[in-house]
Image (tube, rainbow, N blue to C red; front, side, top):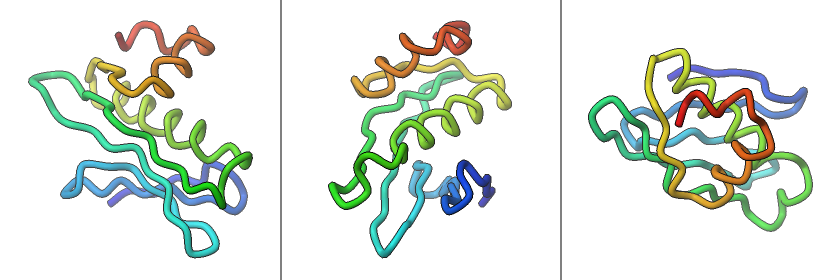
Length: 97
């Protein structure tokens, strides 16, 4: 498992066995899940509990997941609408599509 501090109080962990990136804050876990398809990562769900809403958790998870794809020479299929919207708003990730 690898860790990255996305924010001062947020540590994101890659759980390769569960195929997801996750963070737990105040007893609540948010995550982005994926499936591997050849040289692509299909990001299919971003889940952030209501208790963590408005803290930038979803965006931090997506950014981490996209950077992971880039570092591992993978393309991305944004099945999750939140991931697709994030990429639209951050053109620096367009090359991953």
